[in-house]
Structures are given as C-alpha cells and as structure tokens.
Amino acid sequence: MTYDWIAALVFVGSLVALMKFFHWAVFKIPALEEQRRLNHEQDGRKLEDPEFKSWCEASMKTGTYMNLAFYAVVLPWCVSLDSRPLWRHVVDIAAILLVFDFMYYWTHRSLFHGKALLKVHSLHHRARKPTFIDAYYVHPLETAIGLGLFLFSIPIVAWAGGAPVHAFSAAIATLVFTEHNTINHVYTNLPYQPYKWLNYVTGVHAAHHVNMKQGNYATLTMLYDWVFGTYEKPVHRPSAG
Ligand SMILES: [Zn+2]
Ligand SMILES: [Zn+2]
Image (cartoon, rainbow, N blue to C red; front, top):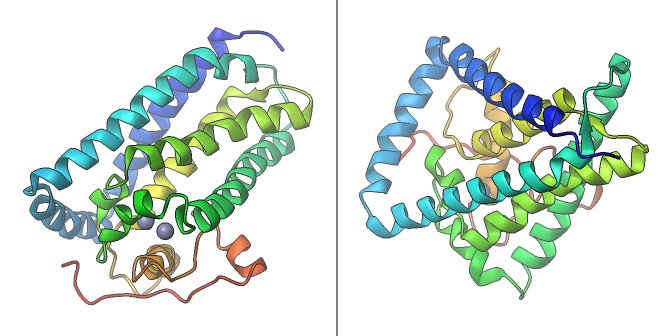
C-alpha cells in the first residue's frame, strides 16, 4: 500500500459534500424540520448550563483533532481511487460499519458499562431525555475511544480485503457512522409512515438512556444486541423535554 494523499483529499471533499447535501435534503421535509425545531429548543436550554456546554465543546474538539490526525497520517495508506465493481463498494462499506459496530458493542458493554470506564461513561448517561446535542455530551476519553474504533475499522477492512478501500466508499461509511450516531440521540415523535423506521432508530437508543442497566449497546444496527441477548424494545416520550 502507498501513501495516496490525493485519494485522502477526495475522501475529505466527498465527505463534506455528502454531509452538506444530506442535511440540505433532509430538512426540506417539513415533518423533519419541525423535529429539528423541537430538538433545538431543548438543546438551547441544556447549553445554558456552562458545565454541559464545556463537556460538549471538549468532545467536539477531541473528535476534530482525532479526525484531522487520522486523515493526515493513517487514512492515505488505506484509501485509493482505483476503480472497482459496485459490489466491492457495497461490501467494503458494510464491512467497515459491521466491524466497527461489533467492536463498539463489546467496548460499550464491557468497558463503558463495566468497572473500567463506568464513571467516564456515566457523563453521557446523565442525558435521560436525549435530544440532538446529547450526541456530543460525551467525555473526551469516550469520544476518543468510540471514534478511534470507527477510524481503525477502515485500515482493518483494507488489510483484510488485501487492497485499499475506495475513497468514496470510506466517505459513505463515515457519513453513515456520523449521521447515525447523531440521529440516535435526536428526539422524534413520528409514529407513522414513512418515518416509522426513524422513530424506531431514535427509540432503541432512547431505551439505552433510560438507566445504566439497559441493553442496546450497539450503535448502528441492533444485530449484535439480538445475537448476544441485550436487545431492549424502543421507548418513546410524548414531548422532547
Ligand atoms: Zn451506555
Ligand atoms: Zn447515547
């Protein structure tokens, strides 16, 4: 493998463009724009607490520095622009997300909910009624571990597949990881089609926040919670506050 800085730049450009397009398209939909307003109302109240705000800022800073360091030092070794069939893009994206979710499941269950890092993780669990901003109400050490697991799932998949991952595939996987982690914490009250799946996604992570004894340890799919017997039914609340 070679240090392909052009592929890494294409990764960053694609990721920024995909995120901007995703947010622009999603909030064109009035029902979702209304949910965003409800979340921001609660977020504003939470951010009036200087301690809450400083934890969120510390988590964001940690995430930004880790991403930049990884994109400059590690990523160029594991991405390329070589063309490949569509199925290979799909397999690589799915592999990155499933490898990460497996590592995250066991880290969350055994370290964050075990003795080792319970205190660190309990900060995030202070959010009993999560809204958008609670995706960032995470101790910087937890941010570093969680994000680190995702970032290193890219070299793991490149190594296991015997070739660098396409820069665009890596960008799609990163988009899904980032947006899914945010959506997990968003308050939604949309128990009708075509939003039932979104209500399900927010409800299963809301169930994890009810108390620290709840399951639903994975973050992207409930696959590992089903397999290892820690699945909890989604919970919903009538209002965001
Ligand atoms: Zn937890
Ligand atoms: Zn959470």
